[in-house]
Length: 159
Image 1 (cartoon, rainbow, N blue to C red):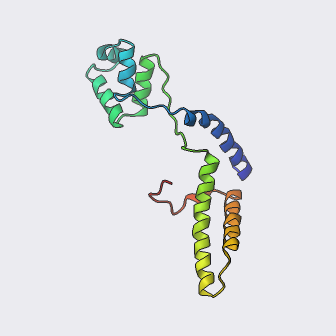
Image 2: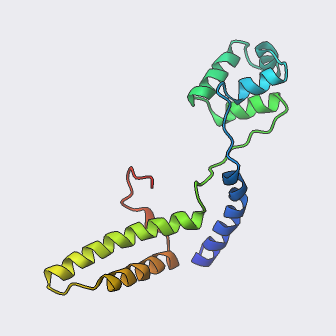
Image 3: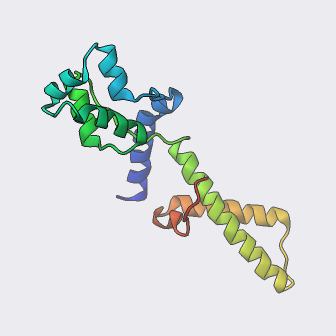
C-alpha cells in the first residue's frame, strides 16, 4: 500500500472510530455477560443451555470476563445466546493522524538534539529558530514517507 492509499485508509478508519472515542463505554462492574443475563431475567442454567455448555461454566465465564481472562470466542458465544451482538474494537485515544504526528515529533526532537550536540562540539551551534525549522522539516519528511520505521526503538513507552 503506497503512502497516499495508507493516508486514505487511515482517514476512513478514523471516521469510523471518532464516534466511539467521543462516547466512551464503561463496562459494568460485574461484566457484560452477567449484567445482560440478569437484565433479561435469564438464569445461569438457562444461559448455559442456550450456549450448549455446562451450568457450572457460566459463573466461570462471568468471572473470567471481569478479570480479563476470557476469550473473544466465549464472549461472542454468550452474546449470541442472549440475542446480542458482540462488539470488539480498539479506540485510539485521539485521532490517528495526531498519534502519528506526535510520534514523528518525538523522533524528530531526538534527532535534532543529536544534531545540535554534534554541531556544538564542532563549534557550529545553530540558532533555536534554525533547530525548530529543522525539526519541523524532519517531521514533515517522516510523515510523507513510509511509516514503518516510525515506531522503532519504542519499547515500553505509551505517550
